[in-house]
Image (cartoon, rainbow, N blue to C red; front, side):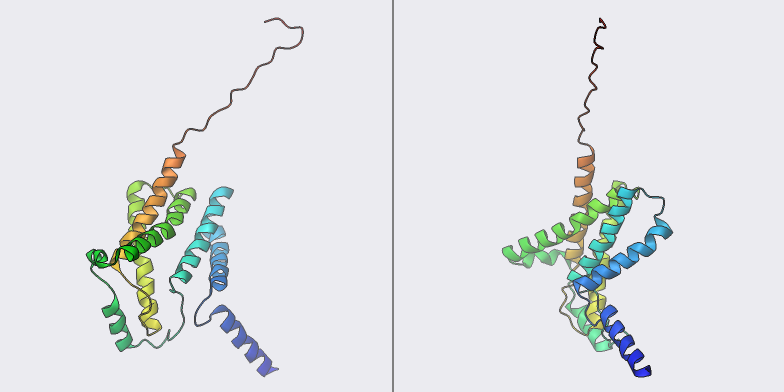
Length: 206
């Protein structure tokens, strides 16, 4: 009985906290966090805003998984040599992006811009009261946080397979801000209003 419980606990740990989290597990934890945070912090939001928040949780979870940021390897055993290697492999000069090939540069621009556009749309859709100035700060913090998570994941996994770059953080922020501007532009499009037609009552003269 005791051995069965131990095997069950080990199986649950491998399922919920695998060494490398897959997309399904990342989305699962995104749902869990949204379900926990929704009644605590967003219970006064409207249904459409709650839906935007839930989608934001799911998209951020998927984005972290895509960037290979979610790892539990060597979590409690940091290695100084691995940390030094990861820091050295990171690109701290944002202007060196121009040294990439044209195809790589275009691919990087499209990837980082397109990946963060949905976040820039979902944040104002959730009605967090974000003006352009605040959204600019949030966009920059979002790009920096993603690259920081990738750097931490490189250190914890004792590898430098994830590309950490200040230039990509700036591009990610630009993508997030682009999404915000798209949302703001769509909100300013006038919605045509249908005028109610008034019909005369039969037998009643105008």
